[in-house]
Amino acid sequence: MYSDKVREYFKNPINMGIMKNADVVGKIENEVCSDVIKIYIKVNSNNIIEDIKFEAKGCPPVIASCCELTRLVKCMKIEEALKINEKIIIENLEGLPKEKEHCAELVVKTLKKAILNIKKNL
Ligand code: FES
Image (cartoon, rainbow, N blue to C red; front, side, top):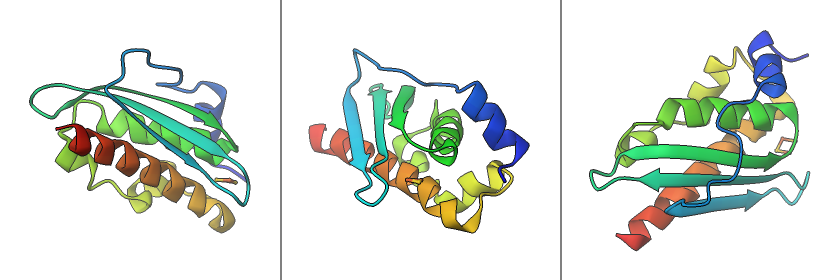
């Protein structure tokens, strides 16, 4: 059902955990499936994402999408990170079942919410 990449990330997630000294946090809960995603970001004075972590209560595609997204945007400028969309995540995960594509979308939305909080704090 899931690609090797999704299964690998689900078994050995990267960038997972709480970040105590985060500059901002973005949180989204899906009311339909009640999955919850939290993304913590530490940003430096050049607007580069210095560190990023996530916590997620959800299905394997949510965990895998969080892993891939955080891997991609670490060390990116926030403006560049905003260009990452669910299509890129799904492609990098070697595909997701159609009915699970919204999971990647939800993860991208959570990142955008966190970045919006950075902008509010600037
Ligand atoms: Fe809930 Fe994927 S099943 S976000």
